[in-house]
Image 1 (cartoon, rainbow, N blue to C red):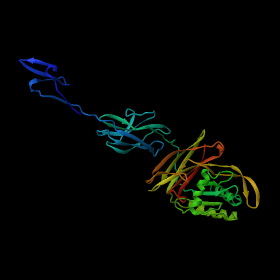
Image 2 (cartoon, helix red, strand yellow):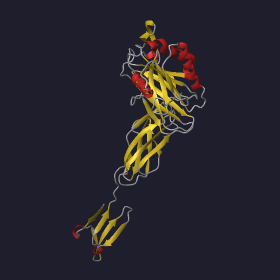
Image 3 (cartoon, rainbow, N blue to C red):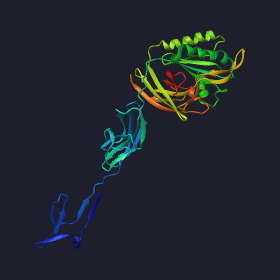
Image 4 (cartoon, rainbow, N blue to C red):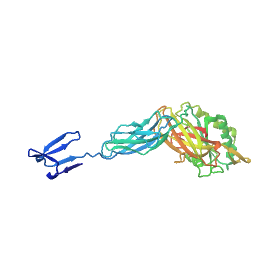
Length: 394
C-alpha cells in the first residue's frame, strides 16, 4: 500500500544553516540524513502489506499403529503471501502449537501428508495442521488419535467364513441347520468364523442389522429359502446351498467346503483383533496385514452373542428351548447392508493397517457371551470376503 504526504513548510521540523532550510530524516539505524527543503517536491512512503493468515484444515488421521500414524492437512488459501512452511504439530495436550512437536511438510498450497513415528503406545495425541506466511502462523482444526496397545500381531492364517441364515420359526433350521453349525464349530474351532443370521424371528426382528446382513447374501444369489449357508474366503469362490434332510450329508459337505478353504496356502490378507467393553460401548482394535500388492479392501466389524436361548421349531420333533451361538447383533459400520467401510484403495506387500471401532451395546444382550467378528472384504458384494477372525469381548 502506497501513500503520499505533502508537508507545509510551516509544519516541517527543520533547521536553518546559512540561510538554507534542511530536513532531518532519522533512520532506524541511528543515521540522520539532511536534505535541502528547497529540493523536496513531495514525500512518499511505502508500507508493505503483510497479507492475511493462510486458510488451513487438518485431515483425518489413518494407518494408526502402536507407534505411528499418517495424517495431513490442506492449505486452501495462502492469505495473499506465499506459505513458506507447512506441516503438522502435535502434543499429548489439547491445542498443540509449533512450539510443541512438529513435522514439516514443505511449503505452498494444497494437500500434504506426514508420517508420525516413535509415538507412545496406547496414548492419545492431539494434532493440528499449520501454515506459516508473512502474516504469521495459522492453525487448522484439532483432531485426536489414540495409538494401539501394541499387543496385536497378525498370524498368517486363512480362515473360513460361514454366513448362516436361519430362524427359530423354521423347523428345518432346528433339525439340520443348527446341528451343522455346531459340527463346524466343534470340528474346526477358530479356523472357522460363523456369522449366524437369525432372520426375523424371536431373536432378531426384521429391522435389525443381522437380518439385513443376511438379506444381502440371499438377494445376491437369488435365494428365498432357509436354512441357507455361504462358505467364503479370498482365493476360493464362495459356495452356498440349503441343507439336506440328512445331518451326516450336511457335515460331509460342510467339511469339504472348509477344507478347500483351509488348504489354500496362498494367504493374501490376514487380520488380528481385540475387543473390550466399557459401559454401553464395545471398543474393537484391528490390525490388517497384506501379504502381496492388493487393490481396495473393506472391513466389517460385527458384534455377536453366544448362547442366546430361544424356542426353536424342529422338524419331526417338539419345539425346544435351544442355544443359538454367533448371533449377529450389531455392526460398528452401518452405511450399507453388509456394514463395511473401505480401509484403503491400494496396499503393498507386508503393509499393515490398523483401526479402532466402537459398537453400541444393548443392555438386553448378555455381556458375558459377546464376541466380535472382524471380516476383511475385497469388494462390497456378498461374495467378497477375504479373511476373518473372531475374538471374545473382555
